[in-house]
Amino acid sequence: MQFLCTPLPQSIVDCERQGDYALAEKKIKEFLKKEISGLLRDRLDYELYRIGRVRKNYKFTEKEAVTQIKSVIKDITDDEFDKLIQEKRLDFVQIDGQRYFERRFAENLCFAEPDYNERKITDKERKASMDLLHKRLDELLRGDSPKAYRVRGAFKKKLVKAPEKSTIVKCWLPLPKSDLQQRVSSHIKTSMKNFTVSRNNHPQRTLFTQRAYDQSEEISFRVEFEYRITEIISNVDPQEVTIPKLNMDAYLQEQLPHIVFTPYLAYLAGQIKGDEKNPYLIAKRIYDWITLNVKYSFMKEYKFYEDLSTYAAINLKGDCGVQALLFITLCRICGVPARWQSGWYANPITPGNHDWAFFYCEPYGWLPVDCSFGGARRDKEEYREFYFGNLDAFRMVTTTGFMAPFFPEKHYIRNDPYDNQTGEMETDTGAVEDEDTVNMKEIIEFEEISDNKERDEKS
Image 1 (cartoon, rainbow, N blue to C red):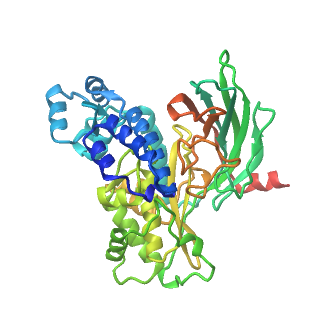
Image 2: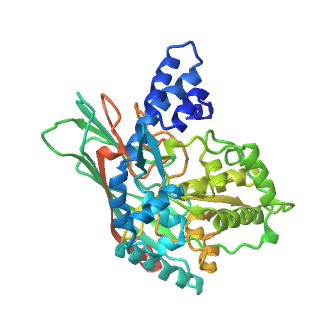
């Protein structure tokens, strides 16, 4: 995806800014007939694909958007909706002369503006999930010792629509992997007879399988798995922190196109760091800046963006992954090793996708940071502070390397070229887009493990 660092020809940029996507597509095809570099060709080919994804992500017509926002926000009026449009407070684009609204525009309005968030229709399941988390955070903040849990989960991916003339369906399902706070069990349960599990040291662990495509029957893939995860509570004395003795070059480098040391990010990192030299305190300054200044927001598909870290720093908004990337980028610019971790927020009530980060601090090792969970709780300072150096156990780690390839690699472009939370599908004739599948996450058991119980099992 490094070709995203290549700028588009200005005439194509102008067409897209003016909402003339049909003309933009025509100009791209004209450019592709010329003698151009391979890098620019890749960028233009990708832009044709990206425009198609724009049309699908901005799915609501204006009439449909009115219905959608009324299902999310209480007592919103048509006049209020019109005012939000005129003041550009809703996420919409002009596509070939018509307004189309992004699929989560109403939710993002609630994230951006507290008044609307107070009017948001309550999601009882989400509230129960949050209450469960906060109950455990309160116990840990009162001094309860960190606990370990055995978790049994399942994931199912169902094909809804396949590209034309498909004869084979390939599927990669996410699996938990051992890393830092998590250890995986060899227990994998699936009805699939032939499958390949990538090694645990692979940065994005998956189960791969394939089968013949039969339009007359349901095509779905399911796997059950088990892992053990431990809460992380750190007690760091900044005066004991030293420069890492290990070779940390891999965690200090750029990773184009999203972990990039641009002039602006270098300036911002310097402004945040100031004259601080202690790596732990530098990371804390970066965490504070992000959690106090960057608001949570749903993002469009990451494939839409040329530089996610810069997007978050300029727009002061972004989801969990974007905030994690910004933290990693700023840390690396300041010489603090930082790395990615992601998978699920494995709360037994409502599991969902989630990303977070770690930074390295000698002699304490890797310490966790969850900027989005901390920033979303800035109204309760002890919760915000908790997510610097500490981490709850409502997690399932599937990924330790951002932008890592699958094993075996996909032939067609991934729905998410960077992360691995809901797996991927493709056929022998084309990519299977996310909206053409149904994903089902399940936490079957979430059981605390006592020391005695662990010893009994090992014996």
